[in-house]
Length: 546
Image (cartoon, rainbow, N blue to C red):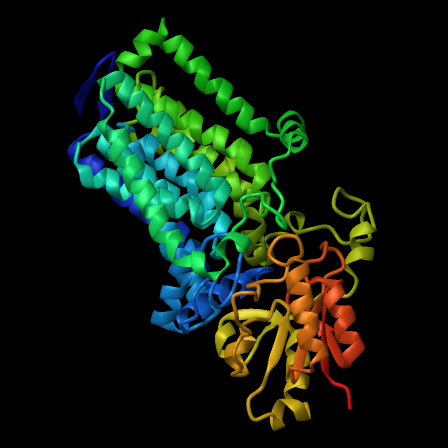
């Protein structure tokens, strides 16, 4: 054991040999949490069609805003498109892409904590918490997750400059990735630049310098121009959502207040805990500012927590989008326990990892029980429906669920290893038997459904043009102009085949106004269960009227 000295504190660090042991365990957990989904068959994911569609279009040479429009930047699709180029346009390639993103996320998270001097065991526990609360639930690529990973990378380069080596290239890289964050998702990107400015201003206050702020600002602005200027000729200002018509802003005071006071229990607890720890540890604000590393760590942690408070309102789907805050708060609190807990002892390390596993057991219990539950004694198995218990007393679930959906693997290359509802597979095979499907020299298809991989399977070109939307959620990426565009194409009978997914429980995700146009000019020949697996969702198949 050796001692690491820092102003106002002494931390106990593990022996060098034990440090290597903990490093191997950390690497194991990073790879385990990131790669676990690669070794199992997963059901088709709701909304994964959007990830596939954008990545496929990029991989075949289409350009954002020139060939399709969307209300955010194209940063999210860069990594999936790269993996499509490497492994083909399959859903499994998306799993590979997300595994790589998750490895980078966890490794960057670990790197940031190392910069603050978090020792081996608190570091390990924090990685486990991050894996359980954030990584395990994000095994498909989604922009609300990818944007945070880009932010984390930008913050790592910034903190490396502020706390370690003051090399200009670190600020340049930070500016690039924080700009990429904004060009992936605007709300997270805006919050990222605010957090960065707070950290840079704190550094300017402590070190009496403004040069880092100027260098970062220049890199950030130049990077934004690099992303945006080439798109301006392609209707960028119409598509990109900064609250202008026909878009709307999600900054609503009522939503923020309601979410803060009626929910956000863990976030409020963490913020109070961080502030209480600082009050106990330091007698004055001057004392905490004099310890630069601790001061920056505190600002950083509070910034992440405040960001999560806002993100849970502006990026509400999925609800796990902001769950990264658990790991940062736990890391900060454990960091402050170094002086009172002998973390270098193996049994204490094991105990804290077990605490994390028990605390966040909901992340893995429901999945593991599906496998091991079959081999457990009867008293550990779910009670039969005839027995009144916590999970069987109400018949509501049964009445809503109806006939269980049967899932199976299909013949489609893009969905290799991914399960679809059997009824969906049968419906697709029925479509493939239609005369229009077999007789068209070059199939033209308007696909308003979750099954966008059919573009590759059925060899049709996705509709394109600077006025054509990437997806069809009304009020988000689809407006009156786009409705008129599609209705006009339908009236002109431009399509051999039209698929329209009816999702009655989602507000205008596939716009019913377009469906009305389709019903006026096309003939309904079939319908089948949507790949989402919800009994309420189904896909309608239309061909030209005879």
